[in-house]
Image (cartoon, rainbow, N blue to C red; front, side, top):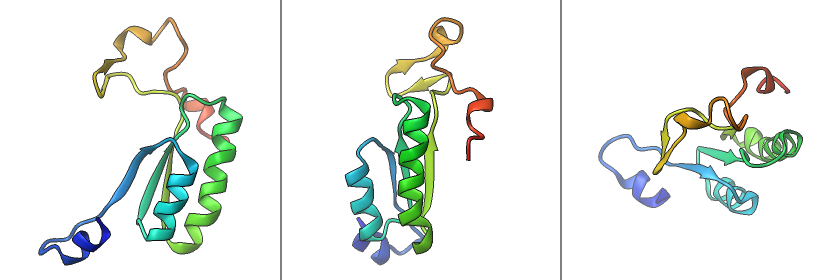
Length: 101
């Protein structure tokens, strides 16, 4: 993908989206992906934050941006409708949990 992006006739960027495997994310960082996303939304919050910090420590010195996911966003993701979960499961992203540094 990186080689194809470099040879494209228009500006192209690649990104690993919704990576759940930290080892795969680290490989993408080593291979030169300009951005990665760690989906730790199913993990306990502290474990999710710890994983994003570990990834960020490796990525940021290389100029690679990192996105983390906390909870889920109401709407459609893949084939899953999340409208029904708002009041029942507590899975939706809570803004107050996202400012944990």
